[in-house]
Image (cartoon, rainbow, N blue to C red; front, side, top):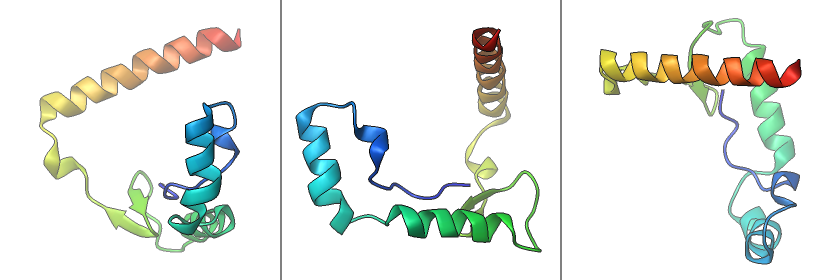
Length: 91
């Protein structure tokens, strides 16, 4: 589920230019964090939610048609490697 790009505290440790753009320009162009959170909750609580689907703006999107089986396998293996790295960090 993709809430959209939202300005917020995620960018608080970036350089001054990124902070300026994030806090003074993007709020007028992008969604508010509250709206994005409501969209995520609304989508997650839908009765017709399809498990494993990708949702953008509350609507399921098909992504698989644009990827070859080789690309899908490569992405899957990359995610598996990253999960192993993260699980080692928790130990």
